[in-house]
Amino acid sequence: MEYFLQLFLGGLSRGSIYALIALGYTMVYGIIELINFAHGEIYMIGAFMGLIVAGVLTAMGWPTLSILVIALIIAVLYSAAYGYTVEKIAYKPLRGAPRLAPLISAIGMSILLQNYVMLAQTPDFLPFPRLIPDLEFMGPYANFLATSDLFIIITSISVMVALTMFIKFTRMGKAMRATAQNRKMAMLVGVNVDQVISVTFMVGSGLAAVGGVLIASHIGQINFAIGFLAGIKAFTAAVLGGIGSIPGAVLGGLVLGWTESFAAGYISSDYEDVFAFCLLVLILIFRPAGLLGKQRSQKV
Amino acid sequence: MLELKNIDAFYGNIQALRDVSIKVGEGEIITLIGANGAGKSTTLMTICGMVPPRKGEVLFEGRVLNDVSPEKIVQLGISQVPEGRLIFPDLTVQENLDMGAFLRSDKDGVNRDLDQVFGLFPILLERRKQLGGTLSGGEQQMLAISRALMARPKVLLLDEPSLGLAPLIIRQIFDIIKQINRESNTTIFLVEQNANQALKVAHRGYVMENGRITLEDACDKLLANDAVKKAYLGL
Ligand SMILES: Nc1ncnc2c1ncn2[C@@H]1O[C@H](COP(=O)(O)OP(=O)(O)O)[C@@H](O)[C@H]1O
Ligand SMILES: [Mg+2]
Image 1 (tube, each protein chain N blue to C red):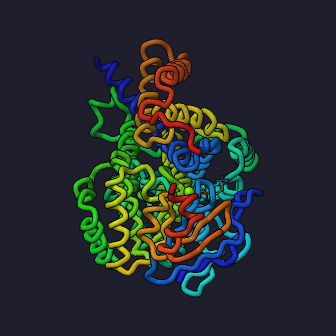
Image 2 (image 1 turned 135 degrees about the vertical axis):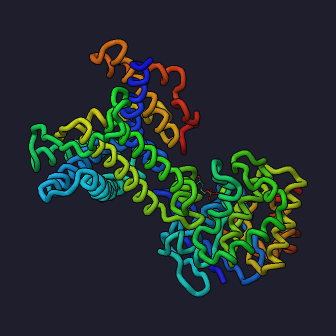
Image 3 (image 1 turned 180 degrees about the vertical axis):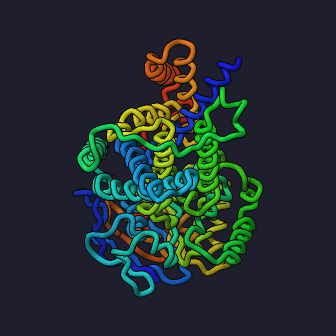
């Protein structure tokens, strides 16, 4: 039972990171029906920005927890700026073009960003400082759950609750939903759709950056290529949950996290990726639109 | 108040409007009738800035709208109830109405207008928390009209509001359109295939064929016109 709980919480932590990244895929898809293949790289860039901030502040002797908070904030803003720019450069000029064009542009952007970071930084792994301190009160519970896992779970949940409130109650959130449901009508009531798309990219990128910094601090090292696997996993989570659906992305992330955690715990950690993708294939066979996705006909 | 002057409009290389000129005076109800594919919806989209004209001018209160963005046009006082209603299916009725008032910041005025549309269509008040997609066709049309009214437009563009509705509901919708025109002096530009009804509601009418205006006259004259009778009234 204790082992089960440990795997459950480990899966929850891992899954909430997938969920954070998956939200970016699903929100962008919901609005412009594009798979933003450069999203994993935005996550990676967020982690790098976190590393830079952490390096500078550590050298200045700041306390760990405040470094974490500031690293998160700056990484979020920096990634948001990247997301905004990527959309303006790589996708906006292709709006109205055949669907394959922005997809290829997205893959190109992904490769470009990876190589850019590799050249600007280094191809090697860089150590990432542990920004999440072990807390005293965890004592007896530390067997089930590392403090960093707890922190990841709490932060992810808070961020997702904030996102839900934003989408549900703010003017911009309503505009985002309206645009996703019917872009033409959104324009007819006066929504600036370009602005909505930009905000969507920025929000999604910021969420990915939160994931990037948290996981980097948890694992302890990063390089230019970490966005690739994380991106694929999160994309899997988004598809699993039903791409375009926000609760779907969260659910898909968690299901994926648990699948991997239990597969690794009860079978073998060599197989965790295999199980993750088997799960995807199974769900797509039986529920092609994903767990919470709507079966919908092609938009015209 | 609103004037289209020699408009040509295209989708890619396909020309949808040819030399279209239409004048709408303040407080008037005018109707544009024509067969499917004549270019009626395109005319409305041109006014709203969604299909900018390649030639000619759209004028509103003396201002050229050709290169004005759709959101600015809403702000200037033109709202459209598009063909097929285009309700936001996963927004509640209330949220759909909120979206109609998207560009307004006068909260009190918005609340007053909300009361007003609930007065026109009490069923919407009942269904306030329901998702737009769960409404019946008639209710969706009422919601679409209300959503457009929430922008407090000077000109209301309606694209085939009777499409797919039962005769009783159609009567109700047309009565409300007249009421809106009468009570708040809202100018109305009504596009219809249901020529018989439209010509009874409107003051003046235009007939469109293959992207051209072929006839314009007072509605009673059009109702008596032999060509119109034959082509559009099924007489
Ligand atoms: N989005 C579009 N792309 C290409 N052609 C279009 C589009 N919308 C309408 N058309 C064409 O423009 C012409 C006028 O259409 P429309 O304005 O919708 O007519 P109506 O509203 O009178 O039925 C038709 O020939 C139609 O096929
Ligand atoms: Mg039409």
